Length: 467
Length: 171
Image 1 (spheres, rainbow over the protein chains, first blue to last red):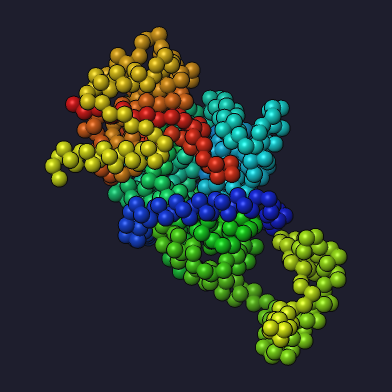
Image 2: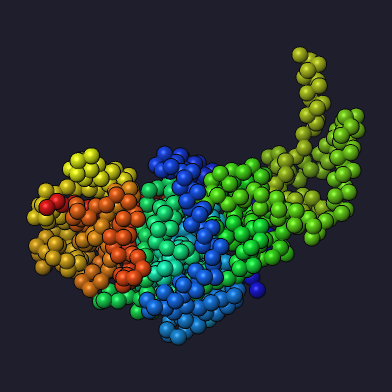
C-alpha cells in the first residue's frame, strides 16, 4: 500500500494568505541570487548531480554498506517495503521501549507514510516540534511546503490557535511572543518524551552516519534528550562517502535559503557512547515505498532529489495554488513527478498537468533533475493509459471551429452572452466561486472569472474603428 | 600569501559569515584573554558548562547550574569553518548535548588554530572518515537557531540558543 496522501484539495487557497506565498517565493528568489554569487553555482550543481547519480545508480550496494556500518556503530536497521511496514516498525520500536510520548522532527517521509495516524492508533502521543509543523498539526492541517509547512497560514491564524490553546491573548504582530510561547510548550514535551522521531537528509554509507540539517534546534533536541531515536528515511537518501557529504551538506542550505550554512547540522553515528548523554538506542527505518521500481527507468533522476524545496518557490503554478492545491504529500514540480511514480499512476495521474512547463524548476534544481521532461513523459503515460477519446474529439472539433475567424466570432460572442446572466447571478466581485453542475467540476477547486459582456475581438475592433 | 595574511583572511571570512547568520565574534590574543572576555560576556548570569580545561576559571562555582536551569552555555569548539561561519564539536564525557542546547545564550571558545577554510577539511579534522571510531554525535552550529515559519518573519532563537557568541583566541 502507499501512504502518500492523494486527495482532492480541501477547498481553495485562502486569498488572504496568497501574499504570504508570494512573499516567501520572493524571499527565496533574493536569497538564490546570493547563493549564486557565493559559489561557482553551475560547477557546484554538476558536482551535486554526480554525487546523487552515483548514489542512485549503486543504491543496493550502498544500502547494504550503510546497514553494515550503522549496525557496527551500535544501531538497529529495519527495512520497510511500503508505508504500512514503515509505520509498523516505528510503532513496534516505541512499544518495545515502553514509550507513550514521542517528539517528532520535521520529516516529509513521516508524512508520506502517514505515521501520525499509526502512532495515534497505537496510543502513542507524537508531537511535531518544528514550529511550522507544530502549528499545522495543532490545526489538524497538512504541511504545504517541504521546508515551510505553515507558509499558507497567516500570523493572525497562528495567534488565534495559540490563544485557543492557552487561554492567553496573542498579538499577531508580536511574532517573537508567538515563537516564545511555542518554545515553552514544546520544551516540556522534549523533556518528557521517551522517543525522538526524525527524518534524514543524507546517510553516509562508508561510516553509517546520518546527517540532518535544521534551523530551529528541534532536531538536536529530539536526537539528544529522549532515550530512543528513530530515524526514518527513503532509501534514496544514502550517499557513498564523506567527500560527497561535504558537498551536499553545503548545497542544501544554499539551494533552500541561499545561506552559507544551516543553523545546525547533526552527524549521528550510532547511539550515545563515551559518557555522551544522548539516546541509548538508535533505529534506522529504511523505506522503499516504490523507490526501487523507479531505478533503471527514464525517471531515475527523480530519485536524485535532496528535498530543498527550491522548485516549489520557483514554480509559477505552486506560487498561485500553494502546496494544498496539489492534494498530495509532496507538492510543487517534484511532487507532480514523484507522486505518480511512487503511487504508480492511479489517482495521481493528473498531477503532472499542474505545470506550465516553463522550466523554472529545472533551472532552480541544485541536482539538475530534468523535471520538465519528466512531466511531459508522465503526461504522455497518463494519456496512453486513459486516452479520453471523447475529450480529444471534443477538443479537435473545437480547434477546427475556432480556426475559422467567422465561426470564432459568432460562437465566442454568443457563448459569453448566453452564460453571463446565469454566471453573474452566482458571482461575487466578478468571480464565480460556486458554479452549478457541470461547471462545479471547475469551481470546486478554483474560482472562475465572470466572462466579459463582450469578447475582446469585438472591443478591439470598436476601439480601432473609433481611433 | 604569507601565513599571517592567510590566517587573517580566514578570520575575516569567518567573521563575515558568522555575522551574516546573526552570530558575533570576539577576538582575544591568548587563552587567558579569551577567558576574561567570556567572563565579561557572561556577567552574573547562571551558566552550564562543559568540563574542558580551556573553560576553567571563567565562572564561579556558585554561578553554575544544570543545563535546564542555566541562562548561558559555555562550550569549546573543536573546529570552525571560514566558508560557512559554523563551529563544530563532538559530544562525549564532560560534554553533554543538553548543555549546548537548553540555555538561551551560548558562548563558544575557539582556538584560532582550529579555524579551517572549508567544510571538507573540518569534517576530516573531526575524524569523520572510515577506519576510525567516529564520535556518536558531531554538530555544526552556524549562528543562533532561527525560524521564518510565521509569515516569513525571521525570528532568532526557537528551540536552541537565540544568541551565539564565539570567542576566538590565538597562542
